[in-house]
Length: 289
Image (cartoon, rainbow, N blue to C red; front, top):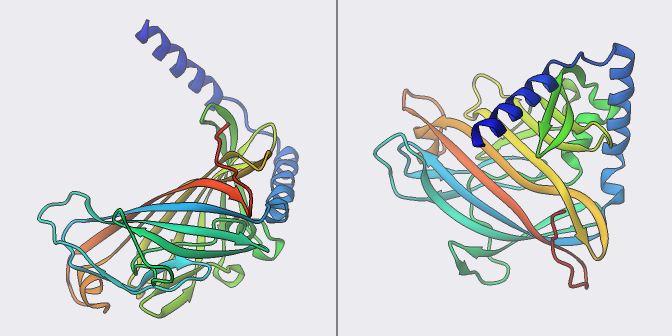
């Protein structure tokens, strides 16, 4: 019976991927519908609070992380963790932050570090971070000023839903995306994929890959962000549920915050979950639908 189910699934996926792409005029219409929803996205969100839980890992040998940040806005710093001896992922830390979204702006407050409560107002632990998941990421791609180039890729399935998949690319001169490494901040071109529900045109996943300058210490900076439905105070919204981010740099930059040299490369990885969405003053918890 398991084999039969597997064969049916494979056959269904192959049929989906074999569908003829929409005609160019229809693709233009689809992108316009996705853009309309993306640009109105943050206007429809209520003011809310959620818990952002991040697990950070490194591979392979590192001793110190210094000021690494990809974002629309928060700073970096340094953190320490034990050195590894093989090319396997090693935990760096885990942290919980209270993420407040008010008036279209995000605010972060560290609440738990490695399972222990921290004092109110304690500075966030430095290291690789990201921000802008609520609205900024979508607007950065679909704002007409970004002049994104879209290209049809395929039909696909995502969490049981049929989706359109478009590739996009944004030139540096039209970009608002930044990389920040130890105070060295650059605007970068970037590209990736957009997965949008075929029926609602809502974005369910975005991937991004920054095109960092050759001399910049951060390389292969990638991010994947998944959106899903939740209920906040009795109303339904599509919000970020999970994020995954990776980047590569030299071990010299990791240890000392300086580029150059012939030191081996290392990779950082962040896995982030967004939980317990609730409206200000209302005991509303996240309820995946």
